[in-house]
Length: 72
Image (cartoon, rainbow, N blue to C red):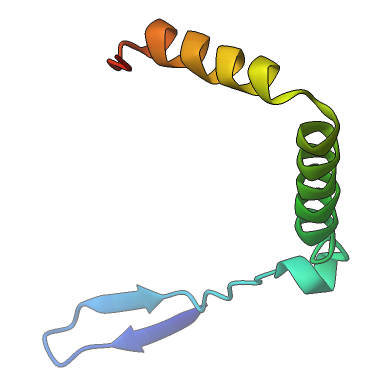
């Protein structure tokens, strides 16, 4: 804390403030979102690669109706 006397006789008190920041890589969590995205992406590709085309069409069709988008 720093005190300074101004010419008008008023004492001004100023505190030194410090801010500590912690980024994701310093916390050790920088790779976690990338790993999650890779696992999710591979899971979606694997599941859609093994399902029948009619089932994918029906699922997309139902989602379109549920969200209010016209599809035909």
